Image (cartoon, rainbow, N blue to C red; front, side, top):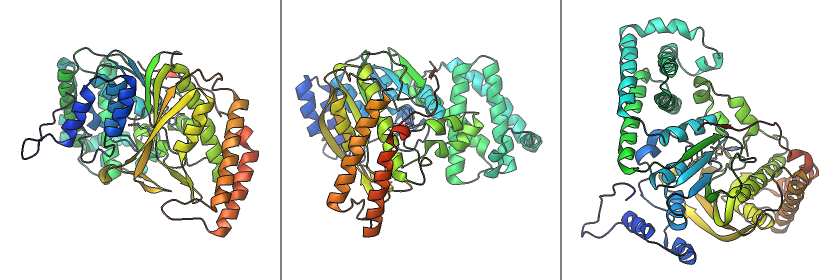
Length: 476
Ligand SMILES: C[S@@+](CC[C@H](N)C(=O)[O-])C[C@H]1O[C@@H](n2cnc3c(N)ncnc32)[C@H](O)[C@@H]1O
C-alpha cells in the first residue's frame, strides 16, 4: 500500500482511491497495461495528493503523484530506473522512491534539485537531535533580542532582498541562514539541505501570504513537519532505491545511453510561467544563481518580447532536443510519458502535445495514445497569459528505434521546427485564427499574427541555437 487510505463509504464499499490502488497492484502484460490506462479516471477528483514528503515545499505547475505512480506501477518492475528530465519538486522521484524503483531527476533550477533531493533522503534521528540543539540555541538568542541581529541586515550581499521583507524579518532569516551555515561547517550535510529547503519553504510562505514577524516559528514548524514526513517514509521504504538528482539541462542529459526503463515528465509550458521569477527570493536567500537558470529556462516569458512566435520556435527546438535526449537514454520498447497543457501566444492556441506527437515520429518514438484530464479546481496552475490552466494532456509514446540524430544537430532541429511552424501558420490561415477560452484574435490581429509567424520562420536557424554552454553538475 502506498499510503494510508482509511476512508471508505457508508456501506463498506471501496472508494475510488482504493479501487484505483487495487487496479495498480495487479500484474499485467504490456498490451493489458495499455488497456488499463483506459479504465482509469484521470481526473483523480478529491484524491489525496499531498502525502508524505510530497508536502515539503510548494512548487508551481507540479503534477499530481498519481500520474507518475500509474506508469511506474503498470509498466516497470522494482529495481528498474525512472527518469524525469524536468523533475521540478521531485514528484516522479518521490513516487519511484516509495515504490522501490531507482530514479534520476534532472532540472536546471537548483532549488528544484534541492527539494527533490531532500524529499528522497532519509535522515537518522540522531541528526535531527543535533539540528534541534542548534535551532534551540538560535531560538533562545532570537527571543532574547532579535533586534541585535538587525545590524547584519546592513551587510547583506544583495540589496534586492530588502525590498519585500521588513528589517525584523530579514534579521531573523539571516539568523536562520547563519545557523545553517554552522551546521554545514560542522559536516552535517543532510540536515543542512533539509534546513535550506525548510528556509525556502518559509520564504515562499512569506511571499505568498505577505509579511509575518513569526518567521522563526514558521521555519521551526516546517523543520518539524519535514522530520515527521521522513519518519513516516522510513516506515514504508525498506530497501532504499538509488536516487540521483542532477542540476542539468534536459537538452544534454548527463545520463547513460539505453539505461532508463521509463521516462515520466512534465516540461515547462511555452510562455506560461517563469520559474526563475517565481523563485527569485528563495534563490537569493539560498545563494543560488537564478540568472544562469533564467538564461537556460525553456519556454520563459522574457525571451523574444517583440515577436512572441520566435519564442514558439525556440521552445519547439528546445523540446525537440530534449525529446531526442529522452530517446537516447531510454531502452528500446520502453515508454516515454509527457504531460503538458495548452498555452497561448498572441491569442492563438498552442497545443503543445500535438507538436510533440508530430516530432516523436521523426526521432524513433511511436505515439500510442493521448489522454486528456481535467485538473482539480484546487490544484489548477495559474499562468499570466492563459489564466487558470484547467486541463492537460498525457502523451504516451513508445521508443521503437534510436533517434538516428543527436540533440546538438542544429540543421535537423531547424528543419523540423521550420516544418512545424509553416504547418502552424497554414492551420491558422485555414481556420482564421485559433482560440483559447473563446478569445479569438480579431481580423487585424490575425493578419498581424500570420506576418509575425512568417517573420519567426525566417529567424529559426538562429533562434533554435542553444545560447550558453555549461556542464551539468551532479548533486548525488
Ligand atoms: C512543469 S515543471 C515540472 C514539475 C514537476 N513535474 C513536479 O511535479 O514538480 C517544469 C520544470 O522544468 C524546469 N526546466 C526549465 N528549463 C529547463 C532546462 N533547460 N533543463 C531542465 N529543466 C528545465 C523548470 O525548472 C521546472 O522545474
